[in-house]
Length: 193
Image 1 (tube, rainbow, N blue to C red):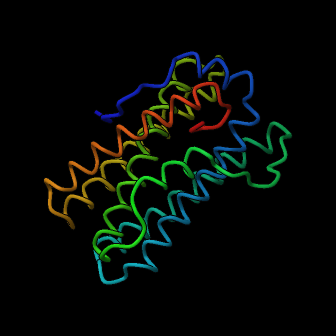
Image 2 (cartoon, rainbow, N blue to C red; image 1 turned 45 degrees about the horizontal axis):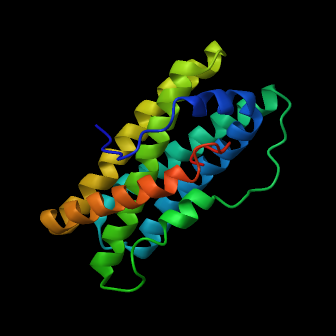
């Protein structure tokens, strides 16, 4: 369903479990960044009324997810700490050239967002199936469903605002690029890396 060209090695879940504090901290910041992305789309493209409406709802949802993760951190006496760079996202953002028309910029941002949500969904599925902690398994199962909905929403908006054939080709090219990026992060301890 997600179309990812390279599935995450299932052993990633074992690494994640051994570093669950790091995963939870990274996850908290991922939720904040997802909310920031939605706000940025509202600010940058206010003329797309349907997009603004959906992004407004998404900001609220992502911040509620942040609260859920932050509550888990507090329960486990894990300090949130300072945000760290997300090398996975930084590498992905290099794929499309800078500039272009406003429509191209919008399409590219929507495709980036769709991809990040798709990879998050896939990783959350692994956590929901492989973690020993039953509470975390249920938690990630629930969030996996949200991420799948976000992925399809972003991809559908890109297809709505751009030429479907061109958007689909860009999507496939981005997926191929992302597969190469993921290869270099297989043993990472972040949500994406």
